[in-house]
Amino acid sequence: MANLIAMAPLFLLCFLLPCFSSAAYDYGSALTKSLLFFEAQRSGFLPRNQRVNWRSHSGLQDGKASGVDLVGGYYDAGDNVKFGLPMAFTVTMMSWSILEYRAQLAASGELGHAMDAVKWGTDYFIKAHTEPNVLYGEVGDGNTDHYCWQRPEDMTTDRRAYRIDPSNPGSDLAGETAAAMAAASLVFRHSNPAYANTLLNHAYQLFNFADKYRGKYDSSITVAQKYYRSVSGYNDELLWAAAWLYQASNNQYYLKYLADNGDSMGGTSWSMTEFSWDVKYVGVQTLVAKSFLCSCLRKGSRNVQVTPGGLIFRQRWNNMQFVTTASFVATVYADYLTSFHSSMKCPVGYVQPSELLTFAKSQVDYILGDNPRATSYMVGYGNNFPRRVHHRGSSIVSYKLNSKFIGCREGYATWFSKKTSDPNTLVGALVGGPDAYDNFADQRDNYEQTEPATYNNAPLLGILARFHGGHSGYDQLLPVALPPPPKTNPITQKPSPSSPSSSSPVVIVQRVTSSWKAKGRVYYRYSSVITNKSSKTVRNLRISISKLYGPLWGLTKSGNIYTFPKWVGSLAPLKSMEFVYIHSASQANVSVLGYNLGT
Image (cartoon, rainbow, N blue to C red; front, top):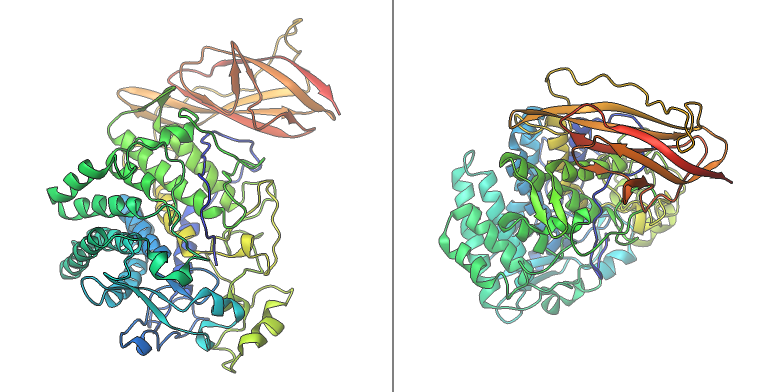
């Protein structure tokens, strides 16, 4: 199971962090692989165009005991349970990714696959929503499932179906499913209008059900409490659903609902710093007010925990889910600001779109290998990726190669305990990721770090499409054809009592990494790399920067002097770190004022 119980807020840090690799990442390849993961998670009758060919049909009797057809949908993670709440969030985020970056997905050739992934989920939700006020929210249960290690094709675990209704309400589950249906209706509005209308009608009914019969779904479907407990309650899902219904229908009722209930339900007054399958306030604010991100830039009231390598960190168990959702929201909001030639005012300063994009890119690059371990946390991407994933289907020989039945406990004894690589590569899966110190153990029983989840991948679709295809007509990160930038040369320090000589072991080199035009001015992004060429550790580094006319990230300013950022106390021998600034001018004057060398 991927994480599961959210316990405390996630604080996001949106600064540049030390560089571990100068390699460029193939976001297009990562996008293609990330979509393959959803095909590996499919339940039901697999279609003829199924590309993950080591999987076969499964869960073909789901719902039969309850007199309903619940065949289809997605397994949430490394298990064989279909949990409704995270599945709905996954579909909502995939739909949002398509709506924001449809052109980029189309240009990459992946729009059709992305829409297929959404439809696989919404087809299941249509089946699960059997009456206006009835929604089936789970098939199977985690307790019996965890007792077994079986391929989905061999399942012998309890496939009981669990539902919510007026006597057993679940406003969070119904609200999130309404959001998924409404968002998906926008995805299919032009290509399949009849299907889009069907989705929207289901969304209307589900929202009314959620709002009229209020209650937490895990009080009704109690078997979900151990795995996907609704800590935040249901107010965020009601606002989230209303926001998507307004987007999909332009019905003023839903806008008024947001206006009337936003404050009382906590959707506009909180300084939120978490966005996940459980907590949707950030998504609500981004769609409606777009004001929550101040806390991400340390220009709000809270700061974040980050690993030494720069990954935002909330918890050991499947931390990557928070990384991808936060990065997606930052990317979308940056593009909103760019479209309006605007910045965002926070309590302690202004935020430029480039800050948000730099943050998002740093997190995605970390995922793909720009980290202290040089490990890609996306299976199948790069050469160094997890090969013993906590995933039943990938860890057992393919049913198509050997259809001999593998029993419940036999799977543990024969396959789970193997130390060798998975027989089936779970291409595109984003695993839980490293701990707070960038440590990671590629072991199948290390479920906190090696288990993937659909909702880890869903936000990645939009981010990867954006970074691969750029922003239409304007892009802060990808190269654009503009007038030649200023020449870039190593900085030399003149000998002086307060500044080390040019032979100093501390060397700073600047270069232009991108440029763009806005409001008649050309802006340049400068990367400045500090290298310790000595055999000793550099501490208490003090830098002077003048003729700087824009924002800077990656150093801490103290008066008129810049020092190491708070997360970097020193620079080890032969190591480098980077800081970045943006302005519409030649490179700033940067000089080293002093430092200490020690062991």
